[in-house]
Image (cartoon, rainbow, N blue to C red; front, side, top):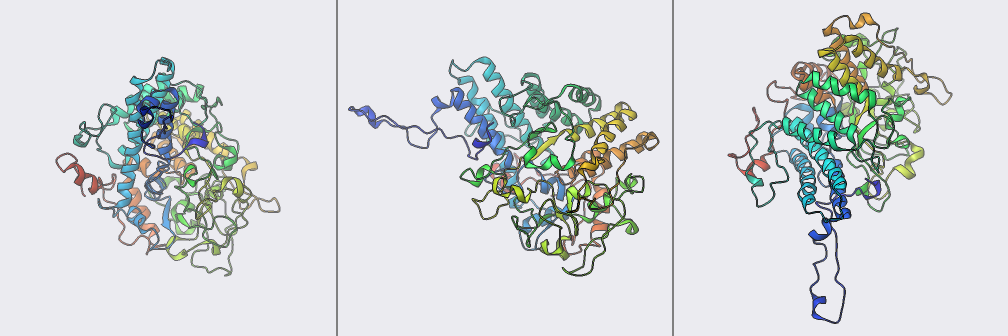
Length: 582
């Protein structure tokens, strides 16, 4: 899809106007702004409908929390970060970090609506395809239909992970034809699997536009679906193919970008590591074409950049997890199923210090990915200058850190930052919904469960080797390493058993994919969300008692969120059944 046409509308509106002539028929003009089905059935019309389905990937028109980037649902709920900012600012997010969410949440309803809007747009494509005009070839119809089924599966994938039991609506059901009577009494994993499988079987390896889903993106999501279904043998077989032969839609062999920071740099979008991402542009006349779901997550003040709004602040637990021993191995990887709780090994931070107070930087060894993920005092924040406490809005509530991934460089602000809205936090940066490192680490999981522990170690070490590239370390203005960086690959002795290997693979996902919307969903599918997150809360409350007041994770309830009460009221409690515990 061309990035310049990623817009958000309920449908792609194709406008028509009549020709004025000297007869009464000129009065029979289709109303401006209405859909004309004859135009939708052309190739351009079908492509327009498909673009509309892609556009909903950013959750436009609903909320900054609604999109598949999952910064609230995957990262804040997973303990990567806390809400941040001020307590009263966007406080609708607070119940998500404290697991006190109720069915009345407007944010919850926005997510439901945004994802089902995506489903609806994909279904519109599939519903229109059979009426395509004769000039639309079977090959074009197959490709468009396969992309639409990929997108439908992707929207349902997040609906399933968020709410568990949800109604499944396909292209055969529409408004006035029973859509409001579809119950949520059937598990939909098989439907998601079928759509991804269809896309994998029928999509081409390369596409006209880098943002279009291809065969290997579908294969990767199908394999990820298998992981959720615990079909590890099927997942392993598919990961073997993806690792051996997978390529991006623009024809690049899948691989790890040599420098970790470049994964998130707008200058390096649609790289060999990009399996599927949102596509965004800035300054196209409207911020609707830019990425707005992360626009609140910049340092607050004292900088030349966007200056808003200090949400999505990395947790103490996450920052401490990057501590390493002298050999470069994780200091507390054994605690990958719990929270960081060794006070003697905590990172020194500026917590509790006011701007200008004396501060001694931590000189002990850390994984270099820490300073590509977490903005912390005294360390260069991209090219914005050294990070200071003055950039934090409310340290006592949100902690001393700021998020760093997907923040654009100051030198890019005029081209990547969108200036058409109230903050320059809207940006042209693509957001990776899946990248190759995610695939390697899922493949490592599958190998631990049904394959070779040694192969799993190899996959994990590929990821760690990239992190160890000294060319990618954060540097001071004088060119020295900004901190004492040490990261090493695992020796065979570290993967001495299936349990040890499983824990290390899981911990590597925490480090590598931090603040990318994965952590909560990983913990739930591993079946360890309750013990891990309650241990996290016990620790994090000692640092931010006000942010986590009353927080507790209830097993058997909080793994999934409640169905929005608005939806139950609209369809009736006899149609939609609420999740347990709500």
